[in-house]
Amino acid sequence: MRNKAKINRQSSNQTTCYVIAYDISDDRRRTKVHQVLMGFGKWTQYSLFECFLTRKQLILLRSKLAVHLNASQDSVRFYPMCANCIEKVETVGGSLPTEELLFVV
Image (cartoon, rainbow, N blue to C red; front, side, top):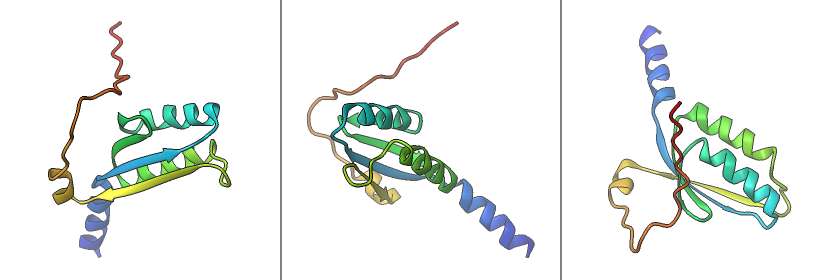
C-alpha cells in the first residue's frame, strides 16, 4: 500500500505539455482568457499557448477559464503532447508574441 501511495504522489507531480488554442469572438472574454493563460504558460502565437502542467494545475486552469467562457460561442482546446512529440516541434518564421515582463523592486 505504501508503494502505491508513493506512485500516485509522483504521477500527480509529473507535468505534461499542453498546446492550448482558443477561439473567442468577444474581445473582453478573449482578453480575460489570455490573462488567465499567461499565468500558466508561454504565449507562442496569437491564440495559442504552450503550458507544462501537472494534473492539479490542469484542473485549476480549466476551472479558471470556465468562469470567462460562453459555452455556446467560445472554444478552448487542450492538446496534450508526449515527450517525443515535444522534441519534434518545428517552428518556421519569426516570433511575434512575447509579453514577458520582469519587475525588479
